[in-house]
Image 1 (cartoon, helix red, strand yellow):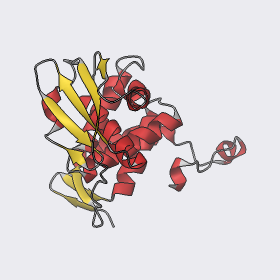
Image 2 (cartoon, rainbow, N blue to C red):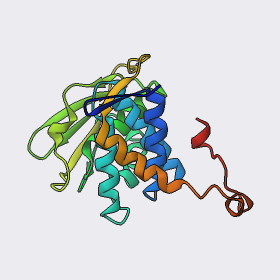
Image 3 (cartoon, one colour):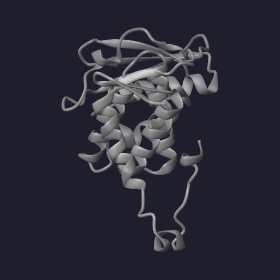
Image 4 (cartoon, rainbow, N blue to C red):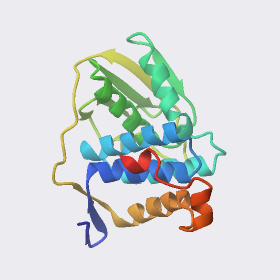
Length: 208
């Protein structure tokens, strides 16, 4: 049973993953990209960062930039980064959702069990180290929209890491949770015969 407390809601990591993915679809992202965003949000929450707030920021930035923001291009950027040789620097201009980008990197490292870490550096000198099991400092120091900082991503060899489990769930901001729920609701159709005749029903995300 979901428990609401003074501005917070108690949820499981699976609920985070599923709701964020549905919200991403509701904001217009392809299903595959949306699933990556959901996994990134859950990874951030698991390592103690604000994955819900990062998702709201990333999806809001995407909506105001005609699909050109981190929520849209982030998964592809991470795939490109992880295909480079160790020590190669990759510049990301106008990173409108840097915390979400960190989440995408972290969940990819954890998912693949890669013996690697990534340095994410901002123009002002702030930087964080990202591994599969967490970050060296709060990714909030990298800046956020509307500043849209340029970030430098550098892949290094390192140790594999797995984020901690959150068996009892986590507390997340209730207002952000409602914003994501509103976006997710855009994927729903009226529960009537005409909708079912057109093929309405549960999809892959609903079955997770």
